[in-house]
Image (cartoon, rainbow, N blue to C red):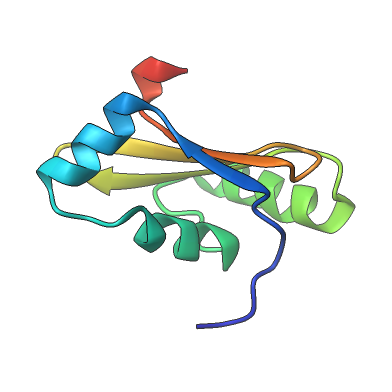
Length: 92
């Protein structure tokens, strides 16, 4: 694994995200590792560029999206890097 590009802070997950990961037998660590290494997942080029800028400035949140089965799971790290949340879009 490459070195983490930022701090995750406290990691939390919504019940919906936990249920989806359990259903597909996927560890949250898979998504957290991708997220913290700068693999933004299923995002368009504009959103990826925004994440890269947020990483450089340290002043905006970082947002990734990954496909699990036929659904998406989002990973959001707050602007101050205090909390990272795994959630489903409908949990937002």
